[in-house]
Image (cartoon, one colour):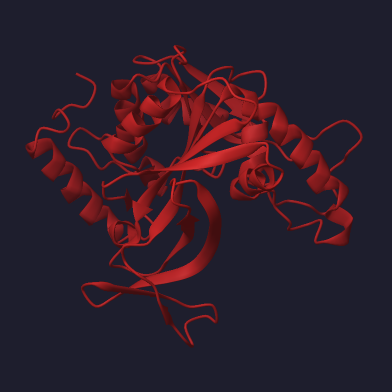
Length: 309
């Protein structure tokens, strides 16, 4: 059993330097609370002991002024900087590269800052209260083993769709023990009628039905502290093969890193099922729905009227 308080790692490096109007800091609560605050509040209630924001140096001052300094009043906050030149010894940024290295690289940047079990989430998604309780319980039950045990919180596809367009989701397959066996990324999934869903692989020319009850990944993961060094080695291998791919665009994705460790037999991933509904502001039109959902949850007693009272 692990008695360390887990850390919440929030990937926010994709937030731009001009904060006006960005969806990640758009107020959705009655007192100007932002979507990211509800995730942090839920994590605090579940027993998480620290928040680590992954950002870029270019947005540090704005980020602290808009979010970080406020959150630091309620839970310890640290920062990790994901920069293009944060590379292992012997590697350099390819000429012309501007694209970030990806979500797996973001997690690798947490070395030296995160030394407890940790959860990883996106900055612009509402995951619900259940997922943080599931992850906290998972960390508490962690036993010493010769294999790394990861967790992924899975959601029902139908509860992760927007009425305002298409979304990208990772469709998950599991074995009889709820261990993850595969994630297939579908970059264009839409609601079909009131109960259906379908995905397209050709820009909307043709569609394939998919079960609305399918389990999908929303990039909500749980890792033991011992996982971080593994990301270093995998990222180095990724860089070594970069020349045979697209050195200006190729990304080191978090699911790719997890799958690599699973294929090598050094890790397994337990899928924890949340019944909560996801909310996000994929489209500008989503803001009203998110605001109404928060208002309803306050009325139900899930959140206080003023979040941090």
